[in-house]
Amino acid sequence: MSTLTNILETQRILGSLLYSHWLSEELFSFSWFSMAIPMVILAVLFVILVDKSRLRELILFGSILALAYSFVYSIAIPMTLWQFQSNLIPYAQNLIPFAFIFHPILHIFAYQYASSWKSFAITNTIAAALFAFVALPVYIWMKVAQFYNWNYLYSFILAWAIAFMARTVTIWLANIEQRHSTQPSRALLSPTLQPAMKPLNQDDEKEQ
Image (tube, rainbow, N blue to C red):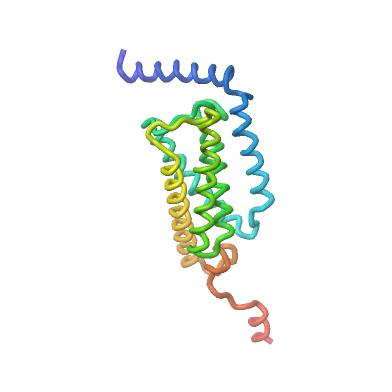
């Protein structure tokens, strides 16, 4: 039997064991609800509070964050920097609540309420601190997650840096679109970053 065949068979057995454990020990446990309930609350708050006039920009920013965290998790977990001991769904290693909901929504609000790099530095620091020094200790205490070669400060720095990277990429992509667009887009960037636009009534007056 080849090495690849052995690996695939081991993965199949491991996957079956993980699913059985999740079904019997994790699903609908206190730890499971500790992720599911905040996830639903954050999702509802997002729907209510998100600035609908900037939805394209904010979703782009959040998608970049989710992609970045998915990449980080795919490296950190096999390296045993940290592990999740309880999962919302089997196999996904909590990508949905943490990488796709908690981080993106917290930092989307930090982005939404900041009109400059200075104000974003403040709101982003608050969002990263809330996750690293408030939410994470609770989840560690509840045995949802476990640190090995990691700590809360590293989590804060990582969350802070990824959000700054995501804002940089978002503005860069929006500016590329702006340069190649035949007409300026009012929904492209936050008001302070948009180009000055001539009121429509001025064109009407010239035509009369």
